[in-house]
Amino acid sequence: MQPLSIPPASVASRNYSSRRAALWLFAAFQFFYLLTSTGRVRTPDEYNTFYTTESLALRGSTAVPQAVQMHNFYGRYDQHGQPRAAYPPGQALLCAPWYAIGQHLLARLPGVPADDTDLVVAFSSCLSSATFSALTVTFFFLLLIGIGIPARVALFATTIVGLGTPIFAYSAWLFSEPLTSTVFVGVALLLFGRDNAAAPIPLRSTSIAGLALGLATIIRPTDGLAIPVFALAILVRDGKPALRNALALCAAAAVGVGALLLHNAVLFGGPFQFGYPTAAEGAKRLNTFDTPLWKGLYGFLLSPGKSVFIFAPPLLLALAGLRRLWNIERGVATVAVLIPLTYLFFFARYTQWEGGYCVGPRYLVPSMVLLCLGLGPALAEGPARRMARTKKIAVLLLVVGASVQCVSLATSFMEDQVPRGHYYDANWDYRLSYSLSGQIHLLWKYAHSSEPARLGLGWDRWFVFLHKGGVSGATLATLGLIMIVGLGISLAGLARNARSTQ
Image (cartoon, rainbow, N blue to C red):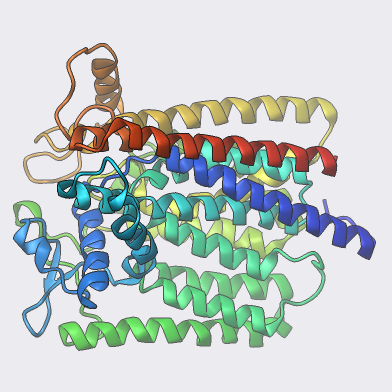
């Protein structure tokens, strides 16, 4: 299967229609993810990102003394004795606009008590993940269109990813995975999502892509693992003549990587001294690679609490489309295969491979989105009988995947995981027998209970949480209504665009 040869006028018309559809798609997922967000931070990773954003906004510093005061510090003290969060400040910097909206707009709405400002600002900051997740699925759609997948098929595949994989669940929390997913899929779009599939990738595009990948290491250092894979994908696509482009990508990426290493040297005294603490709960050393490979692979592939196939069932169909993806666009296929394998084997040896307190295989969420690019070819072409069967399978996987995300989001995973002996054993080692059964039990419990749960427990939705915190029901209803109306308008616009395209 090769991309069709389309007259220039038709290409221009298709591009306009695709861009318009992408705008409606982004708006629809943005409003949907806003509605389904938890709107609160709960884990040390999330808290310390929020504290860094707060420090940047209020003091122009990345030090987080408030984390120490709240006994919720996860990081290291720098050379000057200032507490710094474990992660570089990239995500915190990009969350600043949402923090500002919460501080200067939402916290001043009628019905928001002055004592609730911190709750509302944290809620607003958490909504940044909804935007990054919506951007991820929008870039995913445009990338499929760019490699020649028909618009309706691309829209179906994107819907499967947006609802049936953990990019949906992680849109509700303040982890860095939605932002990393946006970078990875956006870079793939920039490099490979162009209409003229036979033309070499422009040097300017590779330089911009490299700069984005390098700067992504300031979000999370392990994002740098993707840099050589993207460089290799350029070579696989265009051959030896593309060596200059691959080197340009690496050189541009060195800017961001160099900034990260300089950041480390200034704060912690060495370029490879990161902000991670040497130990956490129970004095357990976290940032080593002493997990047996078999254990990490079993955990990510087969365990009931972290298997990629349980938390992203559409991957089963995406794997079947990889060969056709290779025939369509080898650069995209290289990224879709090698980045998941790179992160799978890297984190399988990592001490805290399970990702700490979280839902599913957190560290693999961005690479799972890339692997799902195989959905486009799997759904795009084949005998009528086989395609009808494939679409039924896709719908089933979408329903199962969306159900898993809904269970993950209905109640707080912290309420299920924190009690000792359930998620971690007495030595703070992840229990391979852990599963979603605990959250299913909580879902059943709260569905049949008439007693309101305490603040932070029970139904894990922003409007429930903020109402328990003291925000008036009228204010929350108004915000919810705006989101619902926005979702309805966006879906109507997307439907009109699909009909006009057809």
